[in-house]
Image: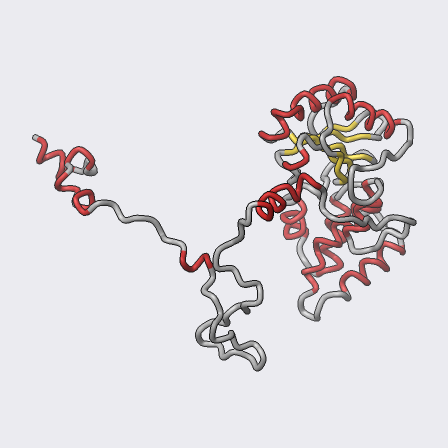
Length: 281
């Protein structure tokens, strides 16, 4: 078994201490990121390390590590390039971008260049349809990226440069990113991104404001009502004039006409069971 560094072991102890006694197994997700930060992937040794730290079986840890795609089970490059090929991005250029990068890098989906620099993958959705077509590098966004833009970004990565994402934090390697996901801050100057949501994200809200559209019956000051058998805590009683949530007034749908509720009146739509077959004879 690979011996993890003393620094990783110290950090593992720190991660586990964040959770209440008896709930230590909740530290599994950040611990998996931590071992990936040292090895660049989650290896069998990394799984054994997490199991040892948390008193779990290796099967239990492997079940979690194999469920989430952010845990890489094979060697991964410093730069994970993800191209969205879902409907919106694919139609607007994502499909062409992915095929162009495949040809340029000489690798396919979930494959790494021979120099170990770049791993390419297509993603079903990167949750940024308002900026389509999008591509991410280690989960940092490059918006409205066409094939020619992607070639420039990948070329810069292969030259050892770190292109500036369209928004969010500066790029960091896969190992650096995994360490942050384990709960350890990025200490680089300017690592914390600032700024509000971009115009594509705000477009719907601005149109609603312009046309006076608002959610009917929504009162943001209405507290969440406790379950019926739980008395309200002091200071949390709902106001007597609290509006009924809009979702509670939403109709459940119209019932079918009365004559359609009796299958005997419409034998052509009745289930073809044995009784109906006998009647038809």
